[in-house]
Image 1 (tube, rainbow, N blue to C red):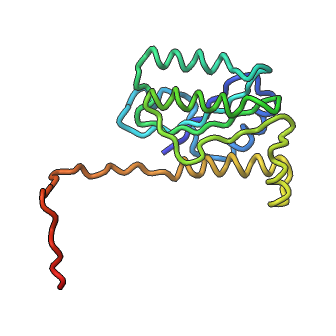
Image 2: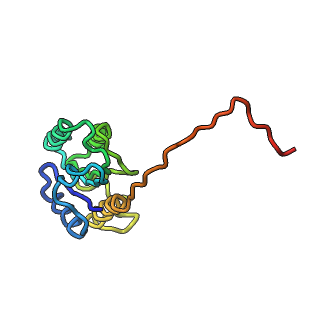
Image 3: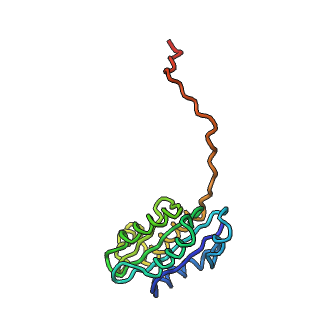
Length: 177
């Protein structure tokens, strides 16, 4: 299964970092059409979003609105990961919580810890750098690759349907005396 990577916003240096990481991966798609054509297959998408000075990305919301107008369940059979960058110390959590909610309403599924956040000057990576003895580039690479690996390794298993439900009014008495 491949993973599609879409970019939203004026990403500049940030987009270049992510593209470098993603170019090392060989399982990438270039267009969203694979999901449009066949909703039976599991779609995996990584969305890389650069926030503006007000903590918003109008390109992403326009794109999301187009998908919502196509179908209320557009992201059904989708596993989504998000990489978000803000040029301030604010907005990443508020922005991601709102889009996670909206996309979930449209059928998207998210694995545990589906968001990687980067703030101004990558200052939220200082603990990673100290704990793991990494440079900023290595810390970004580590976190993005961890998310991508989790998404690529996910295998959707259909759960067995419950066929019978047995209910007793009276409790079963213990056979051990």
